[in-house]
Image (tube, rainbow, N blue to C red; front, top):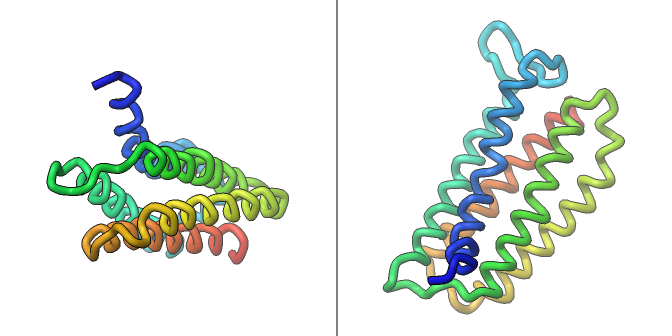
Length: 169
């Protein structure tokens, strides 16, 4: 197997963990920032962060299960175009969205990030819809669809909770 093929197979798996790891690292680095709304007494975190954590875990588990599902020789392998579409949704949608949301969260003026966040949100939704409607709609069975729903809805609910924290506090 060529290096490039191995890299492509693992790229989407690695990209699944980037937001969670980056969130944890940045959270530790910025824990003194008043914008995070951390408390010295219980509950230590705003409820939105708990929702982000729970549904982020659901989304990541769905992504890992889907990735593993396609590594089983009995299941259909992911074509290169589909793998590229998924990597683009994660790399050009998810990661920029994460960075914009983090900057908005710690900013004194989060409204300055609203338009870029909405633009990246639209791109991400289009990229995910393309992946689902071009590659998955006819091919996927019940189990694989469950993994996709975990990934998409888990990320969607986590994002909504984070957005609520930033713009509705």
